[in-house]
Amino acid sequence: MSATTPAAPARLSMTQVLLCGAAVVTLSMGIRHGFGLWLAPITMDRGWSRETFAFAIAVQNLAWGAAGPLAGMVADRFGAFRVLLVGSLLYALGLVMMALSTSGLAFTGSAGLLIGIAQSGTTYAVIYGVIGRNVAPEKRSWAMGVAAAAGSFGQFLMVPVESWLISHWGWQQALIVLGCAALAIVPLAFGLKEPPMPATAGHEQSIGQALREAFGYRSFQLLMAGYFVCGFQVVFIGVHMPSYLKDKGLAPEVATTALALIGLFNVVGTYAAGTLGQRLQKRHILAAIYALRSVVIVAFLALPLTPASVYVFAATMGVLWLSTVPPTNAVVAQIFGVKYLSMLGGFVFVSHQVGSFLGAWLAGRLYDLTGAYTIVWWIAVALGVAAALINLPVRETAIVRPALARA
Image 1 (tube, one colour):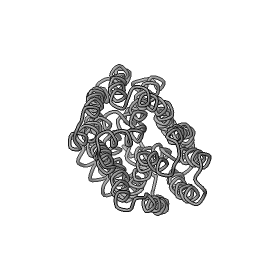
Image 2 (tube, helix red, strand yellow; image 1 turned 90 degrees about the vertical axis):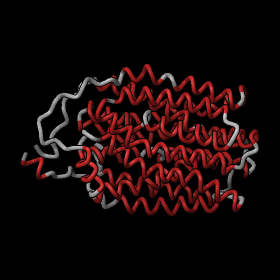
Image 3 (cartoon, rainbow, N blue to C red; image 1 turned 180 degrees about the vertical axis):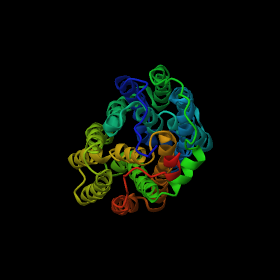
Image 4 (cartoon, one colour; image 1 turned 120 degrees about the vertical axis):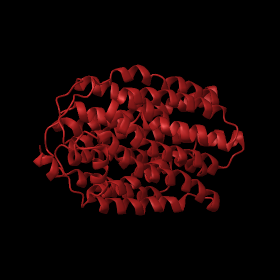
């Protein structure tokens, strides 16, 4: 058996997997993309610094990354269904407790730890594992693009809803409503319930072997390094841009519209990235995305800040927002196969979330120290250039496993 052995026949229909998986990602990603809207009302109401809020969101991203490999292991071994059920319940609980927290520590525990762990079981790594096992290899990159586009549509759909809830019902009631919405993942999980894994012959790769193989492989290390930059950039912009625009004197509606535009245009970007991944080298796609992000940020900082310039920035950045997700996960599947795709995707995502932690917390910290976000914007530019260069040497060919091949 070679490393390029085709995946087992699909056990769930592709349509069912995409519809249910896309709906789950729409909810889970849509809710989290609006968290930046809560920064101002929560810190003002509670009398907290921006760093307090930013630290909780940073912990959320770190917890999401840290729990991701474990959620992936469970999903690979027992199926995504159980992981999605637990993730949905934790998500709802975390949102409700986030509304009720009256101290920075409690807020970090709810908005940070609980929601972060919940997201590890309701987002891309788990859903992509189901896609990898149930979608033919020649359509896998496209299918991942569809799921990522759904997450982007969730941002476009949910951000205006969350803004409306905050303005009409108050920030606490808005979080409770979202907690109820997170429970909708439970019925969707039944559509992703896979039959038990069939018994296989000996000589198959163990979890330990898979981890040693991946972490010892240069291209896997490069993908992780690039994904760190992705996390830093998108979380910094998503969490802090509303406050950045408010500091510059722009109306709150500008930030809401900007976040929604990022989500809308990323529907196009992620779908395009997934589709292009069937035709072009994915490393070239990733390098182009990171390089273009730096160009867009430089242009945004150089031009006069107006609502129009914000909307153009949001639209162009939106095309590049989560478009790294389909090619990155497709490369992992292409190199290592789909048996441990959720687990390996979870480990790559750890790097993404370390970057997310720094993007959220460091921005808040530097703002409190300097009174501005200028330094963080230029850090994001430099990291984008580095990530573009890092992805170019990635090898996309399936890894050769001589021992398994002889067996």
